[in-house]
Image 1 (tube, helix red, strand yellow):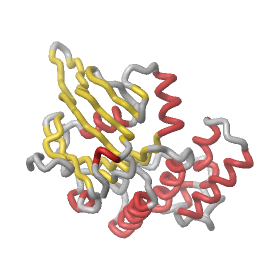
Image 2 (image 1 turned 180 degrees about the vertical axis):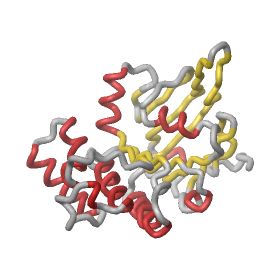
Image 3 (image 1 turned 45 degrees about the vertical axis):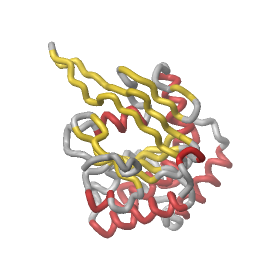
Image 4 (image 1 turned 30 degrees about the vertical axis):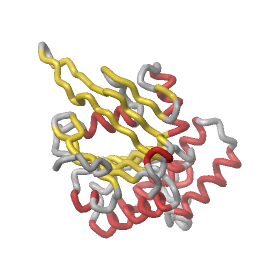
Length: 238
C-alpha cells in the first residue's frame, strides 16, 4: 500500500462535533473528530449503541451538519451548505445502502436502480443502460421486472447496492447493510462489497458486528463520541 502522503483524500473531518439540546442539557454525540479517509479505503466503523455511529453516518452522508468543525468531501467544505446544496452533493457524490433496503415497492428492480439517475437528469435511454448493467453486476439480470415483494431480502439488498452505484459515487456508505439478512445472504452481500473495493470503490460500513469488521482493512472504533481506535494509527488503543 502506498504511503498516506501520496494517496488522494476523499473525506476529511477537522475538529467535528455534533451537539443536541435535550431540554436544559447539551448532549455531545460527537466530540473533536479528526479523520482522513482515502480513495479506495474499505472501513468499518464500530462501537456500542450510543457511541455516535449513527451521528457519524449522518454527517459523512451529508444528512446532517456538524455543530462545530469542518467536513471536506474532496476539495469542498460541505459543513456549512444549505439543505438544497447538501441534497445535490448526496445525489452526485454519495451512495447509500441501508439495513431496511429503502426500495420503492411500486417500482421494478430496474426502476428502483434508475431513481437516482432520474433526479440527476440522465436521459431515459442512458438510465436504462446503466440500470441493466448494474443489475447484471449484482446478479439480478433475470429479475429486472420483479418488484421488491417478489424478491428475497438478499435480492432486495442487491437492488439497493445497484441503486447506490448508479451515480458512480465517490464514497459508498453502508448502514448495518446485512442486519436483516441470514448468514448466507449476508456473506453474499459482503462479497459484493469486497469486489467493489477491489475495483477501487471507497466503502464505509457502519456496523456492530466484529466478524464483519474483520473483513475490512481499516477499522475505526467509536466510544463516547470520539475515535477511540483507528487501525491506520499505530498509536490507537483498544
